[in-house]
Length: 181
Image (cartoon, rainbow, N blue to C red):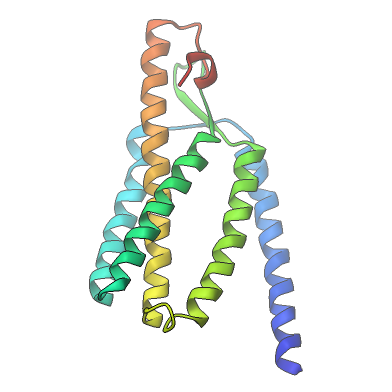
């Protein structure tokens, strides 16, 4: 009984910490901040290099490759979806690209965190039944993160560059919604 109480306490403390972090992050996400398409790709490229290194060191075998590719593709789809919830605009004073999160983006992150936590538990506790070594559970979640961040950066870059091109042609169009991108 003692272990379940301590697990419940750890879960409660973690949940409160996550809510506080998301609450603070939500305030900053709701403000329009400058978005540099060139620098936005740096972090996903570095994470991809790290993910490739970790995957090579873990030496995936057989069905583990299927799990890695599936995690990468699912992460890519989720990243694209998450990026589409970010509002992009051009600052009329400076002509610079701006990105602003939405309540939907914050809810998406919360749901993603909850699902990821549940999936991590399932993968960790049933790794052998799923044909995985335990070390591969972490590599699979790293592949999911690589897909998520890379697709998010690509989608926002494509949309941002298109918005800037449209804005240069027609300065009255300031948001991605107005420009239809």
